[in-house]
Length: 145
Image (cartoon, rainbow, N blue to C red; front, side, top):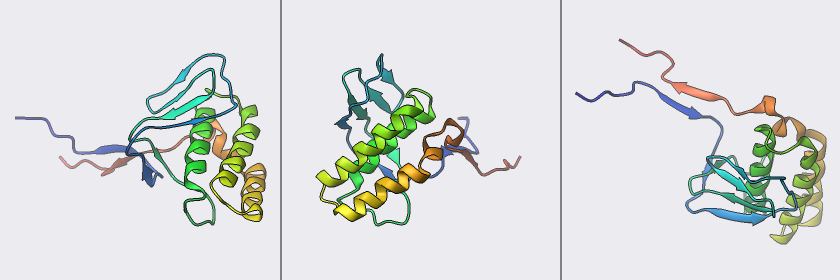
């Protein structure tokens, strides 16, 4: 007889998942290669998420659209590396500025992208803080015998 798990363990809060790897470029330069199960950042600034990487999309009171999806994944990867203490918190300003550049490149209007940027500068620190790591959820919470 096979053993069957009676619970699932998962990370809460994600709503999108890549169907193929995604690579972008950042001016953040780690001293050595950073490689997690889902993200790689090379010393020359190539930031890659593997196929199946999950993220929560654009944050805040906004509409998820073609002007912000690419920026949101790159930004989320950088903040995740900060939460994991693989990048210093001082790189947050770079991550926020690069998000604003990506938003412009993808066609978001000036006022909207400025609002995004200043909202991040004002309220984004907790999302990059290691104390804000995603919660691991278990379901069902009680296993019946």
